[in-house]
Amino acid sequence: MTRPEVRPRPRERTAPPMPRFRSPLRGPWLTSVFGAVLLAALPLVVITGLLDYVAYGAGQSIPGDVGWLHLPAFDWPTRPSWLFRLTQGLHVGLGLIVVPVVLAKLWSVIPKLFEWPPARTPAKLLERASLLLLVGSILFEIVTGLLNIQYDYVFGFSFYTGHYLGAWVFIAAFVAHVALKLPTMLRSLRTRSLRAELRTPLAETRPEEPDGEIGLVPTDPAPPTMSRRGALALVGGGVVFVVALTAGQTIGGPLRPLALLLPRSRTPGGEPANDYPVNRTAAAATIDPAATGAAWRLDMTGGPAAQRLDRAMLLAGSESLPLHTATLPIACVEGWSTVQTWTGVRLRDLAALAGVPNPGSAFVDSLDPGPFGRVTLTGGQVVDPDALLALQVNGADLSPDHGFPARVIVPALPGVHCTKWVRSINFRAA
Ligand SMILES: Nc1nc2c(c(=O)[nH]1)N[C@H]1C(S)=C(S)[C@@H](COP(=O)(O)O)O[C@H]1N2
Ligand SMILES: [Mo]
Image (cartoon, rainbow, N blue to C red; front, side, top):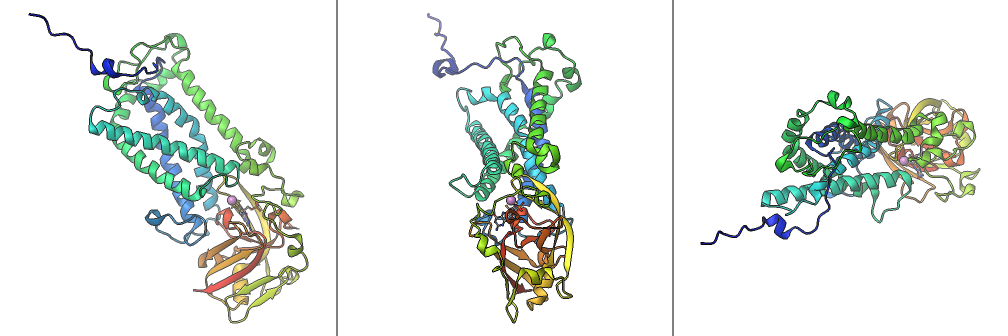
């Protein structure tokens, strides 16, 4: 009798040549450390991002129609005035800071990408498909987000719609991933002590215990070239580097030229009173200087009699249209924000003058034909006592790039809705 021939295991029989990953640092513990950081940070990035989307408001041209994925609309409040600065700042700031951690986490699980066979069971196949969506969507969100703060509109699609739809793919995949992996993560975190790891030098760095099914620990590890604490420090250093390249846009001062990741914050705004970031210059918005000069008028409609005011009438500080000064932020979704002191007339006084004492909304149009040239403000945003049609900033006239002759400034309103070069306002009764 002949012994049955020993058949090679399917893996050996069919596996195409695959790269071998031998880093002795890879293992469930290290992956779980990165995973835990992301589990804490990413929900905040997601929630603040969705809040930004709500703040942009329903019924605006931006963001576009997203079908049934739209969020329940509520009137974005005007208080506290730094609300959008906070949600937007957290979204962009944290979103940038986690990038080195995301990359480290992807590095730590790369052997899984080359696993063969790709899936043994339908459940495994489903799991891998969800991983593909998870990795694909987070990279998509990072790339579109980064490009949005670097350049204007380089996409073949609307940034807002694309980034928003990508977010929902990510949310679904993230929830599935956490549900599947949370027990493994918690168990793996308990296999080593972070404290002990931070005291372990390169010479004593050993691979993690064999991890069987999980499959991250190499079966034939190479000698370590870096300790685990070195790897953590490298990722931490990456985070600090990103902070250094972005913080200047909000902190300003000497840090501003360092904000390499947020180039808009380096555009000079003009003489000192107007020297804060410019989103879109007058030239870029094709504003005709003749239209902003002596011939400029503000048209107001919606009430029983249309009104037409020139800039001198607005600046006169009459009893029905007193000048008001407020210190308020502009916070741009591209990741920078700045607080300045604005002087102008209250939107609610303008509404009353136009014969709409109880405004339910206001449609503001400008000389700018571009996508940010108009906005619909809610009733609450019009009647806030600090909601202004601003004429001056820090005691000087607005510079041409900052919206001369007049611009919208409303507490907690996303910067994109603080329309510059205002031409007309249509007030609608509540
Ligand atoms: N008409 C018009 N208004 C506009 C814009 C624009 O492109 N056109 N950009 C908006 C955006 S996105 C922001 S963040 C603020 C920035 O104001 P600033 O350029 O004066 O700092 O202006 C807003 N107002
Ligand atoms: Mo903006």
